[in-house]
View: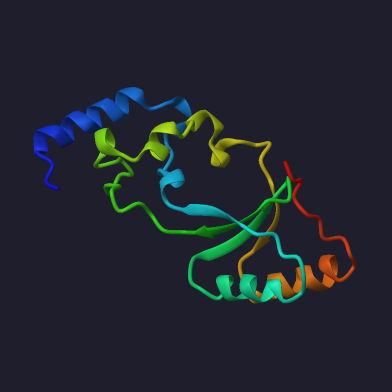
Length: 142
């Protein structure tokens, strides 16, 4: 799909006009990763998958404060320009349109990850210090 230069200029102008203050000076960090909820490990064998995930470059697993487990892929959107502006702003996916920059995790001092796994050793430490001591918590079921 080709987008005309005039259309690109209009998109950029609109983005700058609509940019909330939380995004000023940001490097489009929210557009440089994908995080997807995964099943909470229930037994020791389940941690083998977590180990496998973090063996991959720029792939991490984290646990949110509500005990939700997520896998994170650090990969930028292919539609960002070199300055972090969206090149398909008017045609961006709905998830991008729905995203509320005022709730951005990168600018929210209240948000904290409970655990973060970046390498196998992080997973093994969790197994040793949390799981085997029966301190592992499961997310609440709705």
